[in-house]
Length: 51
Image (cartoon, rainbow, N blue to C red):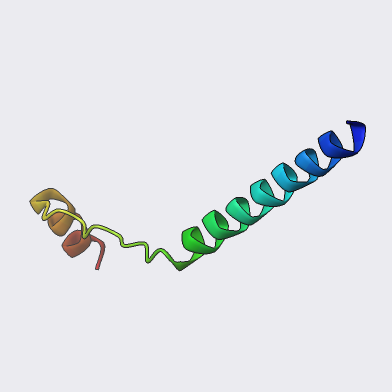
């Protein structure tokens, strides 16, 4: 009985490790993008005055 419970627990641990590794691998493959800055006329004027 105890041996069966140990085997069951080890199988659950192996499944959790595999799922964690797959999730981490998929997360690293995700290509992050950055939205462009909105056109702000005040910001454009500030850069003209700084030059």
